[in-house]
Image (cartoon, helix red, strand yellow):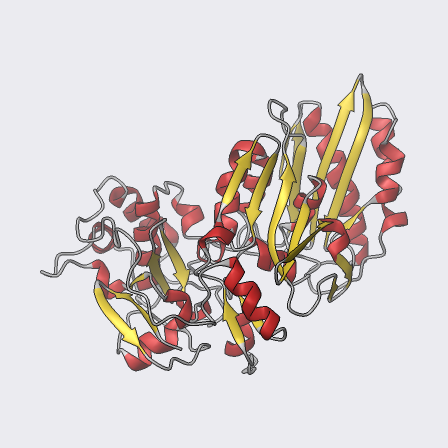
Length: 459
């Protein structure tokens, strides 16, 4: 596979690239750019953070979860490339030095790149930006102090608008299709090829399990599949849209959904992971499907020139089994929209850590009240079964009933009719059942105006 991209402002053209070589390995071993560190090699520590820029934005990504073909036509900036050609430091680098934000220094390059990318994107919540960068020796206070100083400095001129348009592209490659039509044609001829979108999951198979992925096809060049479009009565989310793009889009329409997505892994993972990937891998603890199902989302599947639409909830058949045929792929997901109507959706995530953790239970509640009674209820849980699943018995117990505490408590008792969750390292069966029921009560309390915080409820 032939690819081309910008590396720290210089064009790099590579021929016959192994499609599953990570940017981290290539940077360190082929280019000698060892400022990008290998820590966990699974996207948790952030020591390998690099900045990737295209015509849309600049974002921090984990180089260990980034395959080289995903860089085709983009610009890659490492910590070495943040400094000016004359050696002048980037404002984040200077602030980290001035405020002693580094001790052993191993994690520092990744922290600096994360903050620099966040600065370009206009991120002001530095704690959120750094949730995917772990440091255990300096402590975060001086790092955040440096971030607060650097945010007031202008973006260095040598990093502005890089690139102004698409960067260099490699030779036309069937495995790097530029359109959904080309992807469909490739998968028709190669139905067993593995689709790689953000690679935040698949890269672990290579890094940790040393698996041969076989024939692969990348969707990172298909702009039409990365769009999120809002029509009068529908939001269409392309399968390749990143979780971060979804978070930003949902902030206007469903702010509680957006707030939960801020806890989806880290900034580096949200910038790479895709909506379609989070759906297609069929994980029972994927954070995006439950709220999308609660909103009544429809999945658009494509095979060749033919497309079909199914309710997203019907896509998940059983653990590890989805309604998708060989050669078929997720093209988009659509969500109904009611202009002028305030969102009734609330999404709650229970996990051992607030940031960068996998859900033990995720509950999505979309309950419509009319004349003091429950007109309709769509309640979906992740982590409670082998698939994301609606709580049908709970919905039935609520529908038509007065929107009162007594009705909610009666519906909470129906949780056990819908689910028999397992016990594992994240939570026990009893915790999951109790937590899922309590999330429904939390929805009701907040709907009554209570302010719910960790450990207490304030009227």
